[in-house]
Length: 213
Image 1 (spheres, one colour):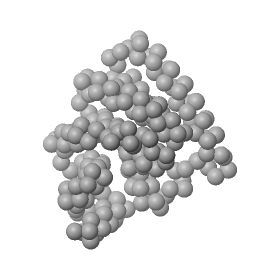
Image 2 (cartoon, rainbow, N blue to C red; image 1 turned 90 degrees about the horizontal axis):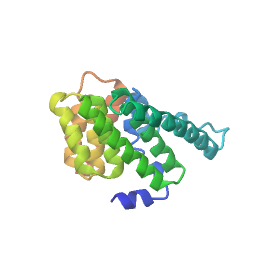
Image 3 (cartoon, rainbow, N blue to C red; image 1 turned 135 degrees about the horizontal axis):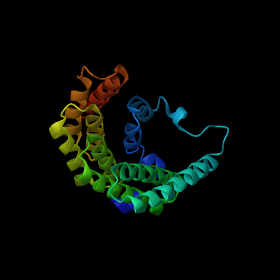
Image 4 (tube, rainbow, N blue to C red; image 1 turned 180 degrees about the horizontal axis):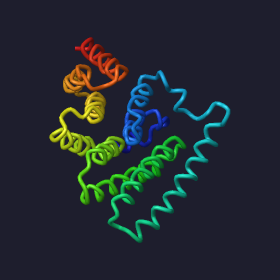
């Protein structure tokens, strides 16, 4: 599954669902859902005036420079939680950029490194957000059982965590578990604590999945 995924020509399009983790990490849940819907796609793409490859190249250079900085910090502070978490997020971003730049092997390696850093960070401190980001990394790598296990662990303690529920529902759909996804989307759609845009999107998934039954 992983090999086939990373051989795909349009790699960035295929990780669209999984880039949720990066956007959730910086608090852009509403924009993420809108992007998945397609309504805000333009604002999340490189500016039209700049060639896409140049934009990617510039961002790659920035993130690779950050990687070098984190490598130095990690060498000096191998058990620093902030360093491990920051390094993981840089690797997630690099993985996304490599895939956009048609470098699947480097993309996979970066995301695998991110997963390793998240694992180390979680040994120092159990944090739902970091665990969710690790679940997202596993999604990209095609490691379904590990991804599900991380999300389920969060939901055991925080059963109404909307971020996790959205990622779980999306994952279940992609894994072919329509019934499981439907149940989770229903829970999201009936929540009284989320914004209307997210609620509407969840209901649209409920309606579509019910039509397929």
